[in-house]
Image (cartoon, rainbow, N blue to C red):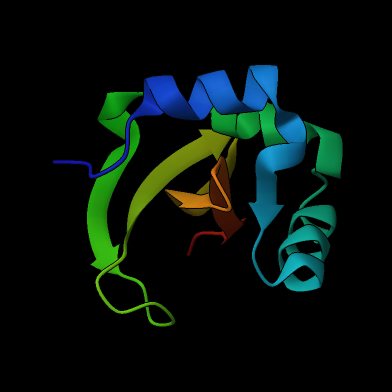
Length: 103
């Protein structure tokens, strides 16, 4: 069962896209670029996630007690591994995410 709400994910992306943070930004953006997914489409990938794409929740290696949800999703026939969490920093809801090709 996912820890984070896809509905909240969509609300944040649609209303405050500047609150989406790509963790290890250059690594995530470069990985997607190599797969042919430009940064602007990375937002679309997140918006297309559905409950049936959920794989598992994992502990955040950087912040003890936080968890990330992992989704397996094929975007335009590209198998992706997507992790995200929704957190509050300085009173703002943020999405912290990473995505790369799935083997």
